[in-house]
Image (cartoon, rainbow, N blue to C red):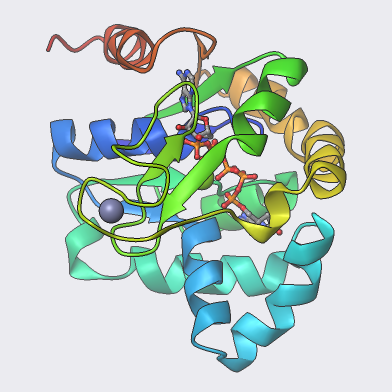
Length: 211
Ligand code: AP5
Ligand code: MG
Ligand code: ZN
């Protein structure tokens, strides 16, 4: 399976990716996670990306295209992959096409804007395993600790101002990709405003696979 997860900030891409990668045994490639790792390691690329991410803007296409191309060339991607947060512009989608990477389906997770704001403001992430919890919708075992014992933190771009900017950027720059992939017969839209397990079940049935 060669899959792309499309959807606004907070739609549940990362949450569903955990279930999808397990089901199909494919690597989960999140450009957001890769960029945050580069920032934490203070690599030149991470330092370049930082100011865009803090402002809720997209990191320039050439940077992101480069890291994805490198990742997709790794042997573990030969039998499939799950892209999360890439492509995010038509330019990135064209760049992916140019690498002759076949995509089987693009899953668009749809969630109303007011719900997205609630999800992002209550999100807590584990420093150790990366799992995303929600203080209300998907509560961690304790307010400070993940199931794995790791410390929980709030992403710096989950502040209300930055969240609004990220949602606007999605509408302007990423949502046109829905039509772009629909025209190619690859788009599968799923209602993301349901319990996590129900969204996952809809993704599997949209892909035509049983549990
Ligand atoms: P990225 O890390 O990709 O962030 P994003 O797209 O804004 O999406 P999020 O990770 O915030 O949300 P998600 O959909 O994964 O939701 P989650 O599962 O966590 O990108 C960050 C930044 O990096 C960008 O702003 C940009 O600067 C840069 N970047 C990344 N890729 C780039 C690219 N290709 N080009 C250029 N720049 C790029 O869920 C959210 C919350 O909701 C959690 O608390 C979760 O527990 C909860 N939740 C999930 N599902 C449900 C449910 N069904 N019901 C109730 N609660 C739920
Ligand atoms: Mg995510
Ligand atoms: Zn953890």
